Length: 144
Image (cartoon, rainbow, N blue to C red; front, side, top):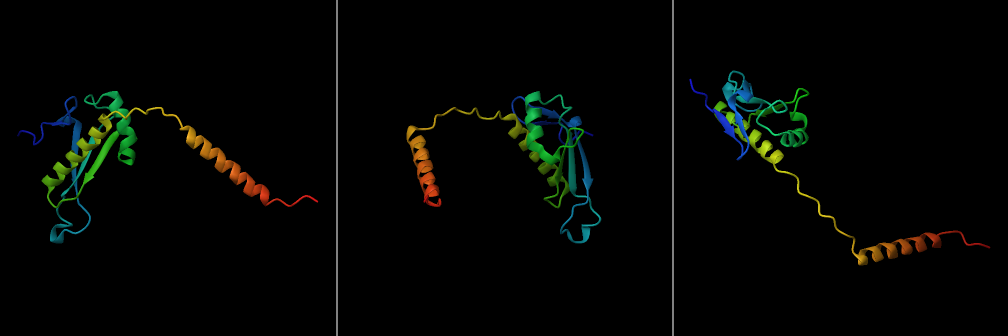
C-alpha cells in the first residue's frame, strides 16, 4: 500500500520524508456525540526535528526557539490536531501546522538597522530631566 503522504514539501529547499514523521491516533476531548469515547480522531504527530537530515542547522536552531514546549527533551516536535471530527482532516491539519512552523523557522530574522537618536530627542530628554530635578528640589525643606 502506498503511503498517503510520501513526502512533505515545505519550501524550495526543505522536503521532509514520510519516514521522519510518526502519527498516532488518540481520543479527542470535547464534543463529539456518541462517538466521543469510541473513536480516535485526534492525531498526535511526532517529528524528530533535531535529528532530521532534511533541516539545515540554522533552521533547527530557530525551530527550537519557536516550538517552545511542543519540543521534547529528545528533540522531537509534537503536534496534536483535534480541531476536526474526522481523522483524515486532523492528519492534514497536523501536517499543515508542522509545515507552517518550519516555514517560520526557515525565514531568517530581519537584520537590525542601526539608527541614531535625533538631536531634538536628546534635547527633549535633557529638558525633561532638568524640569523633573527642579520639581524635586522644590520639594526640599528650605534652609534657615
